[in-house]
View 1 (cartoon, rainbow, N blue to C red):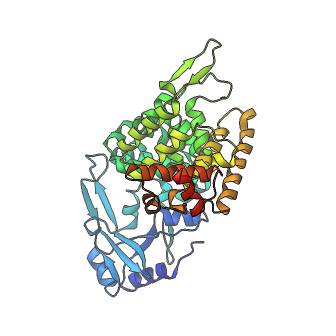
View 2 (cartoon, helix red, strand yellow; view 1 turned 120 degrees about the vertical axis):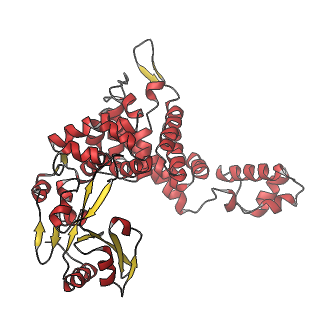
Length: 438
């Protein structure tokens, strides 16, 4: 049963009253069939953009997509895209059609779409239009191209990344012929903008089925992330590990919180290992300085992928710190909270915990250590202690009045903060000024 909101019913009713066909299409229909809550609703219609605008002349509309046949209608502050049925010809850049023509039938519009699960249309009056057995593929949990797979990927190579994203997010397997075409056409991904690749990667990494996708389709992903190729099959020769670097990474990604920056940190956290591998006299593998090397390589990769600076910097910092030990000490943890900040500290604990899941089973009990660190940190935070200069009971003006100047003021404040964190003096103005005079 497809659940339709008041806004969706309003759009359908107004269009049909004027004699036009209109269908819900794409992810909304797919997710509704799967029993998921579907939010973003897109429509396809036989009305031209100008006719759609006329129908909704009493509503706020946006014409930003009108050259592609799309009108956005705002109802109750919610945007809905209504696109005229269309067909496409020629894809000389492996991404955009050279020619777009309006069509009269929903069947023509559905034939140009990427996968069968996304090629189902629905309207309350006519029910489902399912020319390519998309409902059956949803039941079988399969991603399959509409028509000839190689043609679909040659038209738009980004569909290769979309197939991986859907496999990861929906936990669907990829149909054999579709899979073969993905491997065959993978180099076409070099024609796709890095921004679009990054968007698909961000969604793909947060899927529940990401471990299988990373392991099974590493040769495809290596086209856009060459670092993956270096990790594949790289044996670690260390008793802590039962996986090669890539499969260890896949386990860590799977066990990290499903937030893009944490999943990217997990993806790249050991990418520098092949560059710093060494064997000792006992045949045990070591990876000295791998955290800093991995951080540098992650920084380069994320810049190449046009990642935003805030995400990139956060990922790089997490990778630099991921291998550094943290003692179960209130003073040590207070210093870490002061240095990293609350959010980064807990992100680091989450990454370390996921990293432990990628080790040999006998080392999984390290989880208890991270639980203890988290518990201590939360206890300290509940006590609202002094972690930063802004929390000190004195400021730069107070120190300047004692005769300190320039850089001396900052140095004194930092020494006072360290003394408070180490519980050597209380965070009280009188005590702090007395300490500063020394």
